[in-house]
Image 1: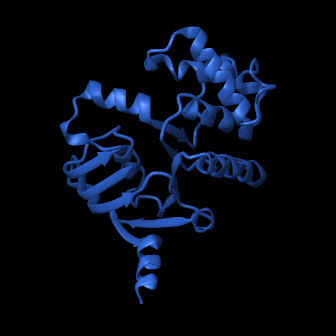
Image 2: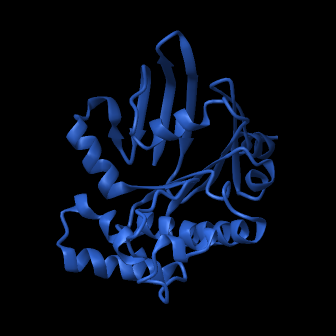
Length: 229
């Protein structure tokens, strides 16, 4: 699903956000990418989600070499294969939960009735079938994050990228969101969670540590080494 080979990302002023990152994530995995603030997590999310191109190195997402794609092709790849969940829910105020989710499908090529039908299914899937007409200010923080997750998965993406999905929630709401992400993974979605929370990372089947733009640990490699002894 994801393969990064010697990926570097630099910004103006000599800021090196990623420094030779190499990692592979197979389809169907549930992975946590964990590191402190400034470690390169957000940049890695942008690269994984094709929101940003690397300065050098190769990025392959769902079999596509990102470096060879035009901007329009990248947009199509995101629309069809990748869902995003962010810490700040990015919901349109004054717009119902149903329309917030349906509007996320505007670039999918689907007609309005189909978008709304898929939105209703996605909201029901995340436990909000009774909240379709509620607006963000009428929802709790956990419910708003569920709407954001419904928007991310309504189009059936193979890959879900979640950036600090529990960061703005209390512990109970955060636990509910993590259960939902695990349920989506169990149903076949590849889920990558970007987090600074070591407890969340340790609860996942695979943890990849990042610091100063470099991969410093990968539990999958540790497991493999243990199996080869």
